[in-house]
Length: 129
Image (cartoon, rainbow, N blue to C red; front, side, top):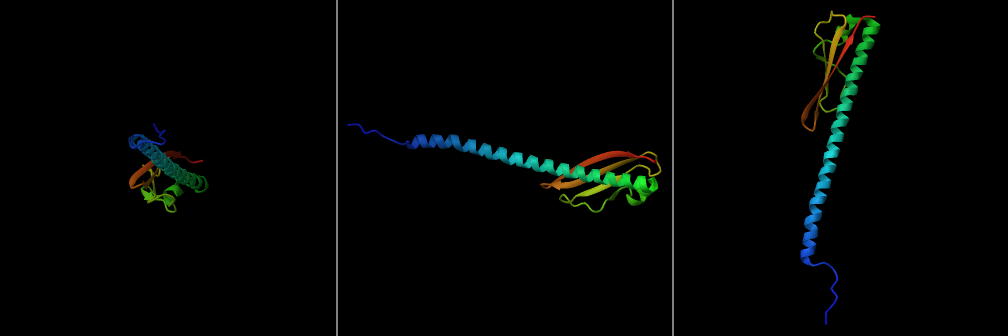
C-alpha cells in the first residue's frame, strides 16, 4: 500500500533556497544602490542651491553697491561663511581680476559625500548697471 506523501523533500528545499537567496540578495543590492544614488543626488542638488544662493548674493551686492563692493564682500579665493548644509561644505568664490567689467566669477562648492570629496562649480558674469 502506497502512502500519499505531502510536502517537500530536503533536496527540493535546498534547491528552492539556492534560487531564492541570490534573488533576495540582488534585490537588497539594488535597493542599497538606489538609496546611495538618491542620497548623492540630493547632496549635489543642495550644493547647487547653495552655489546659486551665493551667486544671488553677489548679484545683489553688485546691483546695490557696485562691482567694487563685490571684491570687498566676496574676496577671491576666500570661503563664504554661513553654509553648513552638507558635511564639510565649503564655498569658494574666485575671479581673475576684480577690476574687470564684466566680472567673471566662479563659485566652487566642495563637500564630503560618504567619505568622498565632491565638488561642483558654477560660473557667472556680473556687470555694472
